Amino acid sequence: MGNPIIIGRLGMLLYDSEVICLNNNLLINTKYGKVQGFQENNINKWYGIPFAKPPIHELRFKRAQSPEPWQGTKECTKMGNRPYQFTDEKILKKMGLANENIRSSEDCLNLNIWAPKSTKKAPVFVWIYGGGNHIGEASSPAYSLESFAEQGVIGVSFNYRLGPLGFYNFSKLDSSFDSNCAVSDMILAMQWIKNNIENFGGDSNNITIAGESAGGTAVYSLLAAPKAKGTFQKAIAMSGLSGNITTQKTHDLNNEIFFDKLGLDSQDIYKLKEMPVENMINPSKAVFEESCSVNPGIFVTGPVIDDLIPKNHGML
Image (cartoon, rainbow, N blue to C red):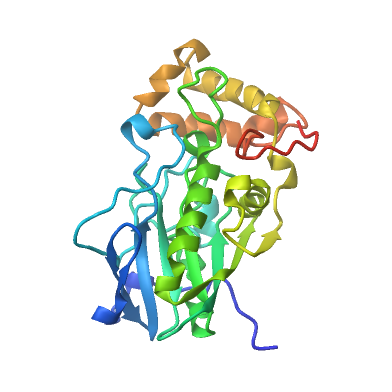
């Protein structure tokens, strides 16, 4: 066996003084348009590649949709926007997982690629961050996958929506809201990787997904989701929250906390579509912190069993 691969080599990525080298070898065709990468530390990198339409305006609370093709070249040399965070970020900051240099935005569905130089058919490792479905980001310096590329493996990370924008299920109250928006983000990201990674030197038939905590739950979700079938071959779930994929009952109880703290009647749910995201942060923080104490035995909101995750194993 070779040397162990370490997840989370700390580094300043684009925020240090090292020279970044752009060249035509890093101009890559994807299904949606050309992306320009850069070379750093002898590694080929592409940051902030959009894999979905921005889930904004009429697409807020809707499942992820494929991006529109673009003309010209997207310069992918900086991390894209990170998702809005819906609980206290002190946790992330203590662990060195927050990247405060990156703007929070609803337009956050982007991915990052680290690849060895001049590689073909390299194995692919996809990292999915955790954070209790309420915090986390692919742009965290601790989640740099440069060390994978150094050992001949292509590393990929992607963002998914968090908190009420990604996980809370309001579709029972209003059918214009979709369920499992965050899971749809993950599925679309995996489909993008499957369909495009060979252009970056990867093997589309040798993809491993891995995640920790809520990222582990994401791995379970992708294993159970029919639409993710064939997008990866191997899976690693680390400390995954196995009881976090639930029926609507858990969502109903946690939604009560959310609406109470928001000061909004569930009959006025349509107001969520136009409300500033910042108004949802403290109510979501209450769901994250109080769900188990208010309703003992009920855990923080996560994926819901529906048409995307149709297997019901009797969980609440």
